[in-house]
Length: 100
Image 1: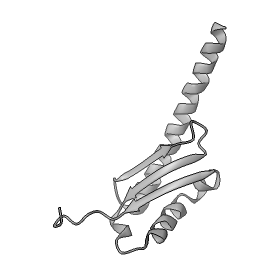
Image 2: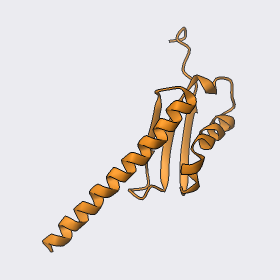
Image 3: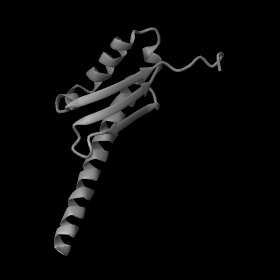
C-alpha cells in the first residue's frame, strides 16, 4: 500500500512539472507576440492540460473588437490550441494613465 502512495505522488509531481512548462511556453509566446509582461496562463483542467484560461493586456488590442483580440491570441497559440479541449481568453488594452 505504501508503494502505491509513493508511485501516485511521483506521477503527480511529473504531471505538475509538465503543466508548468506548457503554461510557461504559452506565456512566453504571448509576451513576445504582444510585447507585454501582462500575461497569465492557468491550466484549469485539473492536471491533464486540456483546458486553459489565458489573460493578456496589451497595447496591440487598443481599438480592436473583442472577437479580433481573441482571434489574435488563439492564432499566436495555434499549435497549443490544437490539442486543447477548451480555452478561455480574456484580453484588454492598458488603461489610460490620464484616467487613473
